Image 1 (cartoon, one colour):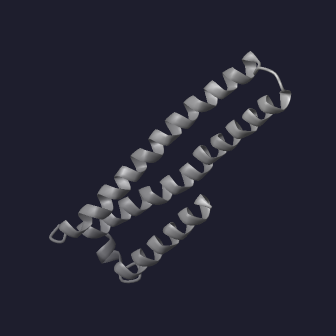
Image 2 (cartoon, rainbow, N blue to C red):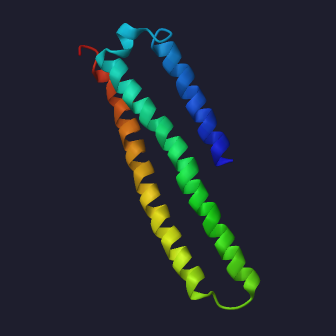
Length: 118
């Protein structure tokens, strides 16, 4: 469901960018507002893709390992605990990268309206 929401958000953003840029008018894209929106939009698209692949894939693997531990009926093996710890660390770093990209997207898209004269 989150992938669908992310995809629709990216699609809506691309359509708004198309309209705002005058159908990809090069002069507008290289203006201050155009560059800010382009950088912000690109960061948002990369965040959606990276978040879906890295965060989603890692979360799915964590779920499978947890299910394997549950299905074994006993306490988790040291190998499974180590794998969960590794996946948790990867999830944390992937989440930080995604959050950083989203901050860039937010800043680029929010300041673009103030860069009219640049």
